[in-house]
Image (cartoon, rainbow, N blue to C red; front, top):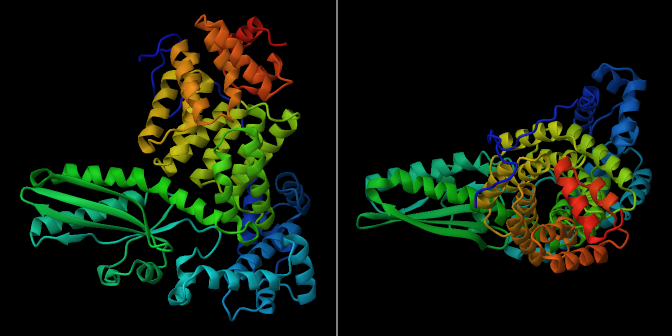
Length: 547
């Protein structure tokens, strides 16, 4: 359906924004200080060393740490050393000792280390190490215990690792073998663009093992992308499989075929399908892996993965549940940027969805955590996407535009980036661009998504296409009844179509969701254009909602 109404702007990219604004630059000395601290977790450090490295006064450095990190430089260093020690204990071997770990990370007094560790993590370091050993013995079969540490990530920061293995070729034809090499190289090159994954391309001589678990252990990866090419007369078939080495299960796969005289087209189809298919499956596998463990056994990465479904659920109850996990991740590892950025977005959601009695405080906290995440890691696409969402909530569209541009530059395959770009365009009134972004997100991940459907509904509402707005928002509510905040504009869409009964039913659902809701609270929470907000306010007033 063609958009009508206030649509006429030329689509110039993943987003369009017309409101230039000034954004306060983040202090460069703070970034320098954090990098210096990260490189001195196993050595000695003083504030004087930090000041000399950063080139600012001690007072300035302390001020920036207090403002953005909420702790002093030395406390931040101590917290980071504790986080590193816990990470080491969680993957410790049978020969690891608590004394060795304490000494390694600069804690000279063992009893003091144990006391501080217990106060920070709620258990003694010896218990952490003991649980690590017991968990490894329970989760890993005897034949694999010697290789278990090679399959697991080495630190909480490690992205999921995938080895792209040479394709097996069931043909002696030289052209078929050349195609197999070309396809394998093309898939590996394309996957290397995905910043959310660590890609390994082993030499063929190292990939001769047939046992997936042993092969993954040998390569130090968690997932294996395997494939086979076979010939049938004038056609070539390709089978691609993604294996989880820990469970030895196939988590994604597909088959393709094409004519031998058009192999380039076949290679393009296979590569594009792999690019679109594996990341959602790997993310689902990582979430399930985190869910199988007790929260106290998880490092910051595992806690973040466990929180991710709640982060993306787009309702206040889920955001609060996610915050419990994310703040724990930040407490364990204070400089873990992904957890910090997602916590910022959860606080922003409480503002957007009328899920807090203190929207100003939540907004300010969201912006503070976003700035902190930007200091900790400005080049992680997940971090920049979450930060874009936060600054969009705050109406800082120019800054949000720069962030989402950076995210899509870093990883053009990240579905959430396209979704957030769509929301940014919906908020600034570029409905046609918003629809294109949401459609691109759907091409990358065809699964139904309530938040994306809601974004499409808002874009069509902005364009005056109320039938389409109702259709998409009803689908979103059907998929996720927790998104009852959709009724803020769904009720008005019904009213614009002349269906007053449905409009009143929708308004009543909004009141059940938020009994103290008013027109003022609705309008103040939404960063849409003034025309959009005026129509919502007018419609809710006609339906009888309190000002």
